[in-house]
Image (cartoon, rainbow, N blue to C red):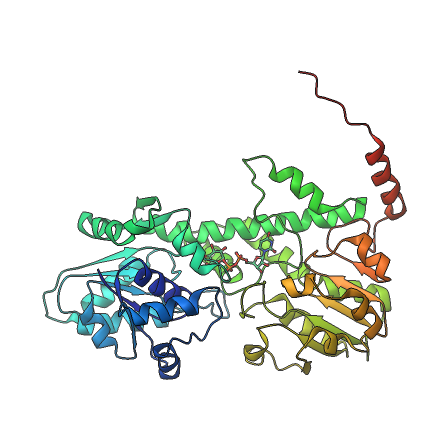
Length: 461
Ligand code: UGA
């Protein structure tokens, strides 16, 4: 099938490449000519596992082309996907300007039956909104079309895998013809399709992201309780996750959720609720908890030092999670802003997110090209992204290079015993043993060793 994708961000570029990979002929359109020129050479402007090799392979097989010419893109395909950015405005409303302008262009150049697909995360009612814009821009031309809501569920860092092996494909449409064509498009992926009304499809996306954000804030609240009572949240989460109704995923406590999706989409759902005279209380709480949680490393530093002025702090990890170069809404941005306000000298390193970092902050941060250069002479080191290279770093070397001994692990990637053996004062999230507040910290080791002494017996059946 011929497919055109408008927008070559994480969603558009990955979707286009994967559709080409399963045999479709794909045209990717973007109005940023420097991005398109690089893409024509097979070089993506984003980091995503396996993406570059797939782009190169599909360009060679002539299944994937890139252009800035939207007219060419619209005329080339029967299926046109809108995969442009839908950022939050200052008041939390979704900014639909890029979607509107893509729809205007499609309307101008439409030359036969088309299925226009909303891939971007757009509020309930956007399928109708796109329909109206198309009709307005088609003027008097009589051309048949359908608009379908087909939200995306890929995660940055594992976007190719999620697209090729997702749990479900949501198709929101009232047109039998469009539904059948969409099913045909995705058939090679062999993923179950769930067909529903456009409004339900739109809401499924927001409700899913908000549910996952609530799950993270929930475990972060449990983590804070764990710290007070002196237990380890990872054990609590493991036990909870064994119940299949709860599931073990998205129960990792840490410095909260970031990225271009969760914060924006929870806000989006709050707004959708408001415009329908409802209140999304759980979403509001999830955001509130997250705001506090992402500053946890700063709170710990304040408790240790009181005054942070002139402290030298090394930050390992700027990306909002491992596997991506994206720093949008990353906890690192908020932590750096607050540390900078408090007079801290900040050194930082990230294996791949440093080039784009400058677009998102004006704070004075010295960027280094390795872990070891970053931590040199630091009073404290904060681990803010769970990169493999941080898990494997030479801890003794880090400790030797630092002038202090504080290591705050915002992602719980280290074992307490190991960190103690190296000589760190180690703080993680939700572990009573490493928490500042736990009144039972000393009991912790005793409880653990007593647990080990309990003899294992066969269950009585
Ligand atoms: C999220 C959803 O997971 C995707 O399904 C969705 O398609 C995407 O948003 C989107 O709307 O486009 P993404 O933001 O790329 O994907 O990354 P996630 O892996 O979901 O992580 C989001 C944030 O939650 C990260 O900051 C991560 O560190 C944090 N997180 C995740 C936790 O703190 N704990 C967890 O257990 C899991």
